[in-house]
Length: 249
Length: 249
DNA sequence: GGGCTACTTGCATATACACGCAAGTTTTGG
DNA sequence: CCAAAACTTGCGTGTATATGCAAGTAGCCC
Image 1 (cartoon, rainbow over the protein chains, first blue to last red):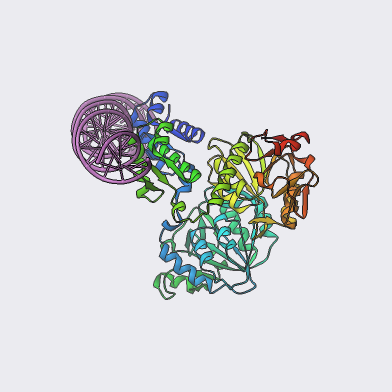
Image 2: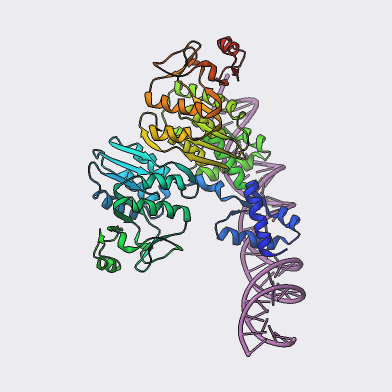
């Protein structure tokens, strides 16, 4: 049995039963425990399963366990959210994506703000919903469990039928040559549609992701109106983006 | 059973029941008391639960100041949810409304269940989303802040384009003459659409609401296939509904 | 304060794991 | 087509982890 074949079989078993035992696998495929362990390790490194003592679990198993307080680089994201709030004005229609930065933004929106927020991100909607003066429009479709936003043609066609004042996206990678890029095909389609349906585009990202790239392009650098990071606007890292005509906060 | 799996089970139980007894767990999972204690200790260290003499409590429970009445009706709703789960089968398409009873249902869905849940209730979607094998379809539209579900023509037209196997609704009032009734115009429109788009209708309610009425009618008693309360089916309160041809659980 | 239950600590055992190595297999590059 | 290189796999060794048991301690309820 080939390695790839074996790993495919393991993945199949994990997705089927939500768990596998190393001993079961090695017995069933007739290879040594070591081989199975090495396979599990590789699969775990690429995020396809979660390795635990004695076997492995499906990644969806562990998903719900992350509490909101353990957000990666929380302080930085809070700074970004504060800056982004200044762009939001009364009466605006605002399309937003998902991600922890957007959720921080939702949490720091001033309570007297009257605006309409449109999103397919369930966690973001949850936050918007608790604000007293914000109207929330939900983009419906099937939920992508990884990103917790709705994705699909229905969602895209809903977004296309809108025209928002602002599109605020948390982004995963940006550089000068390829613009904004991401690694989830379905999410990228949604982001593209949101950008096309908005007058202005605001991108939020921690500086760590500046000058990085992911496989799928979302949009060119020219599309961006405002870029917000936790750094001050005169940081040398951001200079090329200012030269490219982007407002940097 | 793997350690992680066991701990996930314990957490699930704690979040479900708000408390667990070490002895119950060790008996149920078939491991020694020591193992359970060690698990509880680990989970307590990472803040996922609060360990007390003899068992553990949910972290939300401790600083949550729930009145005894709330807890009382909470237990009833859990009984209802448990009964409702028995109607859900693999591969089904299920339309659900919102409300605390529906959320309880979402929490007790068995993890190996494969089904598609369609809803406009944000809290319900949140729960469905955390289940490993459930596909979630979101009904988009504007959020009604009172009920935390999406309402409006867009939502209704989306629902009309579906045909689900089951419609599960938490209801606010029911009597023999006027059937199911409610007090929020927009929510009633959604419920009506959901009922029309499903092969079968299941209504969940605590017995307190049996034989009561609200201003706006949702549907006639004849539309209901199954009625679930926390009472045993042979309770005299439910007799007239059985006579009207409804399956009572 | 007595009796019960739960808890702590230390220890024994079984299993799982990491690491290095050697043999076999596949790929690469003349 | 052959040989070097890279990869894959299984085994032996030592270590780490998980679990249950036993004995003593602490906490709870009357």
